[in-house]
Length: 288
Length: 134
Image (tube, rainbow over all chains, first blue to last red; front, side):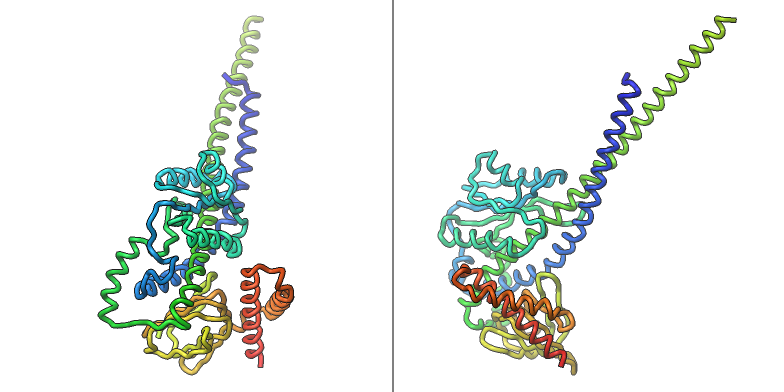
């Protein structure tokens, strides 16, 4: 059985750990609030742009702009969003698992240290790595958007996917893969086909000002940029939420351990006292 | 008609409106209910909306508007009421952008575009703010 001293040392060390995890929990909680607010308030904007793009794409020739057009070939660039630091529960390992399921010829663009490490260690092709900004801002997404648009237009890649953690709630974040380019994927296409039948009946044909090309030329890159920004916001919100929960659990586990150890400690101590008294009383009886 | 103005930070407006004037790439247009469907590019400027007898004015940034018969959707990177505009910050932004633009050869094409857009935005903010004061 462990000695009193050993148990005391362990209790202290666990107690210290729980203090650290508790502090991290508080920090993550504060950051989480901000990140969640941003992610939630950014959603309407990206949804509205989405709506506009869809209603445009619906009524124009899809070959009008290369970013919309369907592509053949299976070289896909994956923009992989992860965190810089660990201690965020299963956040990153869920992403890695999702990544293993991707097929085709893949090239990676990573954001965050964990993604970069994973891609390099597993000998996958890394074409670019971008730092994960501490505070999400649009400027940080611009080089990523430019890179994928450029590579896509040069036909070095046929599709662009994004792998990230979708923020659903504080308790739930899901690793997902979404298609970024070409902008219209097969699923949307099917929906559009239905919608366009409806619209033909209504007979609305929108005007474009100044003209379709200029509007598309301006709106499509903006759309990609804003999508990336929104995803960055969600990734951040997910990261802080996951870390908050992970640290909360760690703190609770540590305190539970401390309770157990304290109980054992008291038991051993009591036993020792009883033994001592027994010794003394035995000695006293022997003397009589 | 329904008017929705959305920026990356928030929904700036989502209510009924009787008319709205938008600063588009081809000049200002005023949209009334039943307007023909239109998708248009917006430039930084002033957005004026009318509800009942009341006019309100917003400083708006670059973006897009989709107009259908019943609804006007505006996506823009800026939509501020005069009282929300920080005149000093806008003035500083204008100065910074103007200074940066004097050294045009040192900027990449993209930095130039971003800075020029920032300048237009700051100017729009200042115009709206000052108009409101008078």
